[in-house]
Structure formats: structure tokens, C-alpha cells
Image (tube, rainbow, N blue to C red; front, side, top):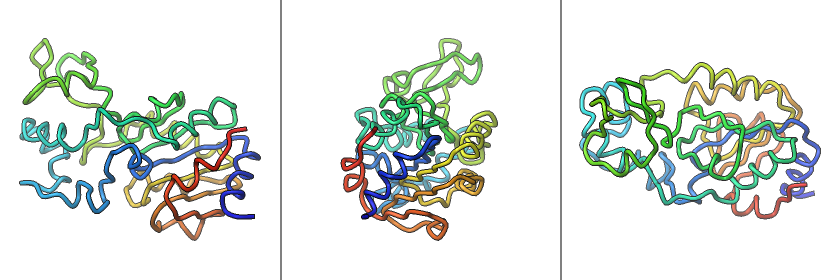
Length: 240
């Protein structure tokens, strides 16, 4: 039995499957991985990306933050790919508890997934820092400089910046999902960004599956390890 057949069998037999996804899942949708050769960490800017997307930088220089954010963090033309669609279809069977993601692109929701724990927030949600009014992504993409609310307050994206804590309720929901899972499938993440990566330690189910293009610190713990591109895996799987 090859690795794809093993994965199909694990999925077919799973009753409480949970997916944990990182930036690698969205690269086939045209969104660069932060740490890839062409990713944000290898681009040249006046400040390091980690500095620009920190809370202190946002508060100090929101105009420069938004110049970078619009240019490098938002990809409005991106559409769900085979992985996003597979997860959404599997959820419809009732055997997938949902997906936990480190991504902020909203593509799991776009694909139709209903139970999504967005650990680092989403570019699709934005709120005024003064009055709390909600704004869609178009309020950011359709403006220049620092986007402002009708009350005059700065509109901030609901993404977790460096120096900000994860949302407590989202974290609790993610941990609950992982502890209930009998199958955990980890996709496209280096598993080096904490605290999110540490959630894997709470899995006590039957099968831990890691699918990634490169190695991770958890490879030795995997029941099934597949190191290849997603387009070599998911088109060959069937939702039953």
C-alpha cells in the first residue's frame, strides 16, 4: 500500500478528523509562503517584515504598516485550491470536526468550511479601534493611506500581529478540537511558530499525519509522513 492509499484509508476510517494548516496550503492559490524563497522574509524593505507587522510598529507608523500590508499581506484574487475544497467537502460528511489554520487569507471559509479556527485572525474582518464598527476587506483595499472609520478612528485588521496574544476563545476552541480528534492531519506548516505549533502536542488520537514539502520538528511523531507537493496528493483522494 503506497502513501496515498494509506492516507485514503486513514481518512475513510476516521470519525473525528481535524486538519491543521499553515502557509504552504495557500501557495497553490498564489499566496507566497512567508519563509519560501520568494516569501516575505526574503524581500527587501526599509524594515524587517517582523518589525512592520508588529503591534508596536502599527501603533507608531500605521501608514507604513498599511503600505506593506496592502502590498504583501492581501491577495484579493486568491481562490480556494484543491486542499481547501477537499477539507470543506469532508466536513459535509460529518466525520471532520473542522480545520485549525495559521493562515489569515480566509480561503477555508471561501471554500465552504463551517468550523474554522483562525489562530492568527483573518484579513476579511476589520474593525474601528475607536467605536468597534465592522468593515469588510474592501475598506482596506479600496482606500489609501490609513483607513478611517466614519467616526474618525483607525480601522485595524483582525489579524494577530507580533507582540499580540492569540484570541483566548479561538485558542480554546482549537485545543478542544485537537483533543477530541481521532485523526489529525497537519498540512503546509513548518511547525516552528509558537504558540500555535505547540498545539500538536495535545493530540492523543489514533493517527497523526504530516504532509509538507520540507521536514518539521514533529516528523518523528507522525504515523504517516508525506513530503511532496499537495497537487501530488489531494487530487488522488476521494471524499466518501
